[in-house]
Image 1 (spheres, rainbow, N blue to C red):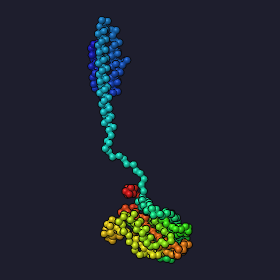
Image 2: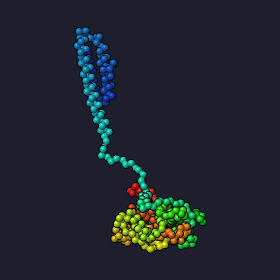
Image 3: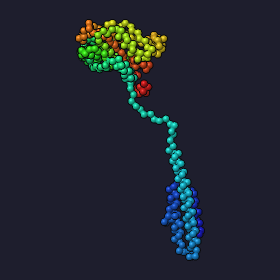
Image 4: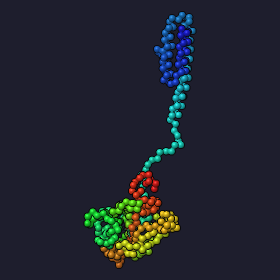
Length: 339
Ligand code: DAH
């Protein structure tokens, strides 16, 4: 029996030392110390032991049991520690990794530019008014002093819906609509989409945006127009910006002018951006033609006013130094999110 006990002990210790998993230890415990385990079985053989030897044998069995139990516990602690270390190693978090960026919505450069123009004019007491994109010929042309057959119609290759209705080729018809309402004085801007049958290229698109401006009141002069647009240019392109008025012709204004701003890239010295001239054209303007005022039932003897029209894309392209208008319409997120 002593030999048997010794064998069980050695075998059990060997297995405990070799076991690499906690579950394995449990199996060993059951196999040796469990109700039907080897040590328990061995105790059943006590009845064959001489009575005087029983205390000694019993003591030996208890010693083996105690030793196995302590070895099992020792192994359990070691294995549990090892398992925990492995788990920690596996779940390690690298806090220096850059975080994933959340994608959030973003304003289009056109929108940013429009809001900037609106902010400037609202600051000067202007109202923002919208007009329809599908417009009457009468408002888009006739009442702006562009009768049928007028050469200015050819400059704006227009999409017609029928003889009288078209997709507006400019935001100027909103001037007519506002004046016709008969509420004076007027100080308004009108941003919106316009349409022309143009081929797509770096500076053209069949659909683009303009911002119209109109002021009607008593004693409005060209000086008011100059002061207003100079202030706009300074706010939009920086306080150093100079403006230059070049005589021009528009059917609905007299006199008319085109406005250039000093190149905000080179300060007027001349660079690639302003094509060496030091100036960049930004808008058309003029004093509202007396005939236009009459057609809108405003007495030109009593009231005068000025108007202007800005190409929104042009402003956005200039402000953000984008050299191809198509980029504004392709809606490539990688491009748009830079602004
Ligand atoms: N409507 C003109 C265009 O599309 C721009 C313009 C010029 C508007 C002069 C105006 C203005 O109100 O006074 O080319």
